[in-house]
Image 1 (cartoon, protein in one colour):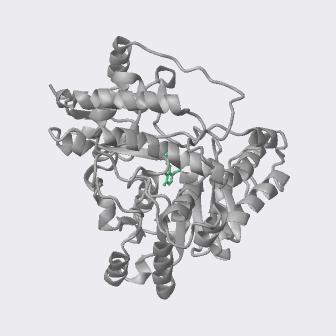
Image 2 (cartoon, protein in one colour):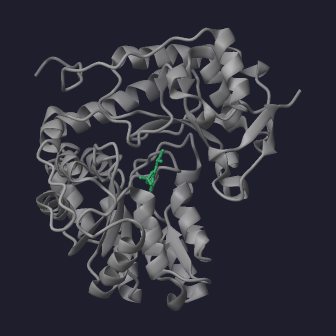
Image 3 (cartoon, helix red, strand yellow):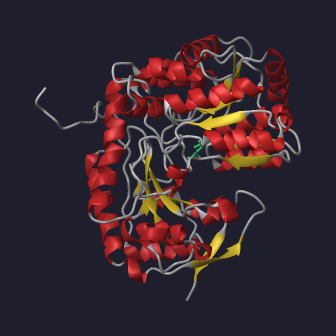
Length: 451
Ligand code: F0G
């Protein structure tokens, strides 16, 4: 075909108005939110890139499936459809629904992990790290060195450092490592994919030591698309076949269906281990719900069953990854330092390079995110020193793109806003904390500008 423009592979049937505010209003709103964009009312945000989680638009097929929801407490047919869809892709024996990803994490780490244990991951997401640490275990990030250099071009910057994994097992001993995790794509490290080759190597190390391998599978479809585009031998495979091949290398997964499940809520936990599954279901009943709904309505299970399959459609993935790359390439071309190449669900601005005059302890990412809001009503999120404190290896501002929500003109507007802030970056100031919670402090922290 000679037409090169990649278009949104859908037309719009229902619209949701968004609202402009004035700069003076945004100044007051930002102050009232203590410079923490989590504390802003969403109505006062024009373009909301806080997260791609649960913020996507559902398809006509999902809405239709919702009407088929079976709300029976036990044995609902919606659960059967959900389980079939999950197993079709993941292939694991036990499928345990949860209300979102972190509930799956909490149950997994409570059952599989104890104080003094050690969990390796390419990079733990914040809730994953917090859930590991909450049971007294240590969360260890073993990203390849390439993944820690924002400007470096490398096709699979989410890969795990195999030598570091071997060394860790050697050092702490197999008994202290209840499982190894691979996060696909690597959200905290820039939305970067993990190659099949790397997953195969991690799996081989795990098998050799008898350690189960779990995937944090939130963005498994985007990861599969990157493998198709970038890894030799996969160009002619379908995203679904690639995803199936990757899941087959592991023993289970945790999943937030709010991402590549294309749903507004939901998640699941899978395992091949019968004993573990029983313990997990017991804990599920205590806090989430009966194992055929796990805190979700039957209609949610239906939406996820359809959404998981839609996330693997080639037209969708082509548009999805192209639109994120479009944003990244346009701001990078003007000099804005971003994590290269652009990720699947988000573009990450390197705030340390954008604002070299603001040291990490004065939260350059928070300063930049606040300014993007002031400039254009855009909400983004800091992934850096506020989120991870001393564990932060970078200070990034993530522009996460909700699925099937914004069009190209929204993206063009974003480019303009970011480039305006880039022009006067030298005027931005750092911030200091005035209030913080004992864990996951970024959600509720209060800050103020340093004068
Ligand atoms: N793992 C990863 C890699 C994630 O990105 C998230 C959520 C979770 C686990 C937890 O899932 O929110 O359903 O409980 N990430 C969202 C984000 C919140 O904005 O990146 P959850």
